[in-house]
Image 1 (spheres, rainbow, N blue to C red):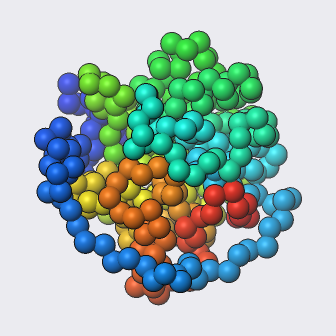
Image 2 (image 1 turned 60 degrees about the horizontal axis):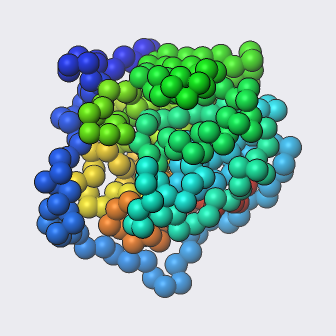
Image 3 (image 1 turned 45 degrees about the vertical axis):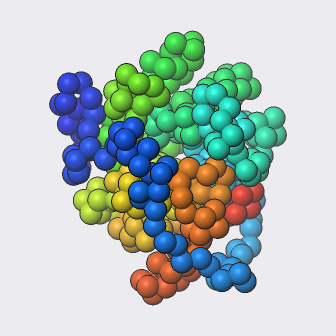
Length: 320
């Protein structure tokens, strides 16, 4: 099965199954003045996500949530990073409202040797220039895997070990793992003039008998994720966003809510899913501790075992 982004709108990439989900400045102004305000059902004060902690074996494949969409994954002697962001702000200039309120679980200085970095798209909270420079300096042989159109950003910084992928394209790393770019429903851009000039994607990574899936940033559609589940009938670990979903009327096309995250978990038949894209930066209106409760309600509604989809704890290693 092969996916190709149509890329037919004046050289811009598009989302095949919905109209352009990106909103204009007027929508943002209306949002900030309360036009899109929504009520929230807050969790009980004593709420704790009802899943027991797993025993951890450092010899087995593992994942550590560093914060936001950044995971450190260890498998088959390889170390992966996803959308690394270690800076204090998720913006090109320090903006108080975009300041990190949870420190990274691991500093760059204490990272093990990184073999591969997966970049899902070029938004500032997923592609951070300072972090990229620090990682490249510390690990000069690291391989960067990026969506179509993002490689030129790296080349301008004289970072050359970069592989660019369109949806459905793959890259083999050291004959030990295969990395496949898969569709996501989002948008791209770092300035006023480059909207959707580069692609956005998720990644499926096959390492020996294990497979993991990094969703990246995405809204939900009933086609792409089901296709991913059909092509990879055994996904051992999925990293799925569960935050930055309110107001739903504004963000639904580009960010999944926990209920939709659970639907992705089901569509791809993930053995274990970990939540991300919450509890690090305040990018939306839902209270910072609401995503795990909404995830609990969604899992309960589907009558699924809670230990199959964990909201993630920053710094806690999990076997998969």
